Image (cartoon, rainbow, N blue to C red):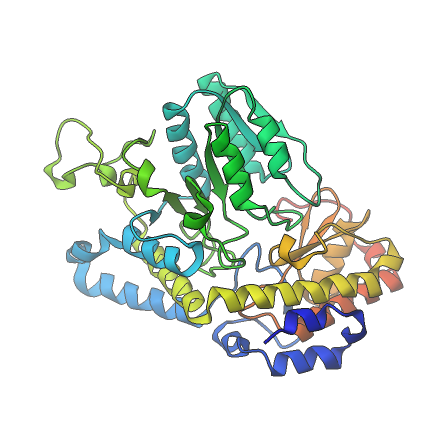
Length: 425
């Protein structure tokens, strides 16, 4: 429908124009399928935790009833759920052919499994981004220490993120593994996945992508990009609930070459023979470990089904339009109050969230939540993130959120907030 280009013009940053865009939005009907709280609340933190979808609630209730009725006999079908749901998720959000994705464990555990397997199979250094999400950096620091590998941290531009030439330079003189995020958790910068993957391959390294802030928000095509490995969570844009299981992807040509460093009975060949020695099953299933969370897998399946119904191309187009409106509103309403944009301005260079930088970001964020009923989140040292998930965020929501934000800083209301940091930000 082309609304992305239309909202990019500052002349159209009025609430009436936003309302017109909502009236023509082909995804507008999805909003009613989410529980979003009171009529005044504006939820702009879908990049951290998606809200409860009625489809997900129904799926959880149906699986709970199945547990009640079938008891242990349900395992005859449940045992295949990690691979079955993985294939559905891969088709809906990851651009991956069947047989390469499973849903299991957490992002941290999956990252450890895949990175550890890659280091066991390749000699050389680990390349990562110093501005990447903490769990990624910490896992890689631990693996580097355990294996005696050099960990080369890219010092990239905070807004733009890593570039192919930087990755190529860091991979010089032997690299085993490159680990980067497709969308940066703080800035929202979208990496040039195909070019960066090619740069890693040129140096002989395997390339592992963290898709936590990309899956369900941008058009990911792992197979076309030549990616080797990927991990990601399902509780952000896939709306599968807090702590819902993560996913991992292993390119089909690598599956029998790599072996998970965590050996468990769900990846054992002939699992129920209960044999004395470990022999991993062929294929991506060798990256399973322990018993899968059957109830939570039902939620992931429902989240993937909603995304497939919406269509990732339409989701991506709306994400670009929503964030374009946010960028224009930043320039028009916030720049005069000491804000700066911490996100790339070009729509094709960002995901579905924008980062607003301000020296007093913590207190402003608290005032938004406690005084204005706008729920974003804060990321140290100075960023307020607005996650604009396309399935339930309206254009008027973006306009209203920025209007309330401008009102808070203009009045100085945030200055009355406590500056003490909380554990969860």
